[in-house]
Image 1 (tube, helix red, strand yellow):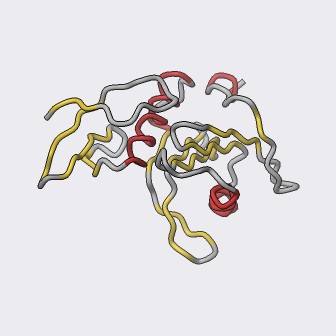
Image 2 (image 1 turned 135 degrees about the vertical axis):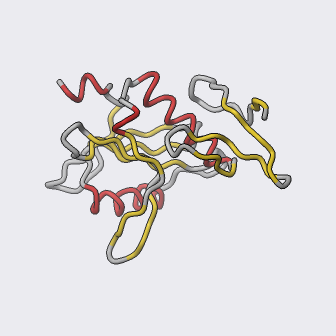
Length: 156
């Protein structure tokens, strides 16, 4: 096992345990408590998780990673969801690989997922560019915001 740095992202640098298994790199995911294949998207996801916990101070216990949800009768997987202590979804995050351009299609994807989870905050990132939205469920429109509120700010 060793520490490895892949592509530099627009997050604070972090160092994560990496191991080779059958000529493929795997990274330890402390949220899922298992080794997962190290893909460019996973690299972004792990940096985003560190951002949420270390900079925005979201409790680890309120964060879910890569779980299934049903959207319009179809099984999908979200990247990251942060819950309130009462179980309400506070934040839905969609992570893409750094080489993936964030497009309208990306926003359509997270909006589709959000119809199932009803979060009022969305984050879309490819590790380079981060977009934050405050969704008003009544009008189903994106309201871009400059930065993501901290957990303390959200909890008032």
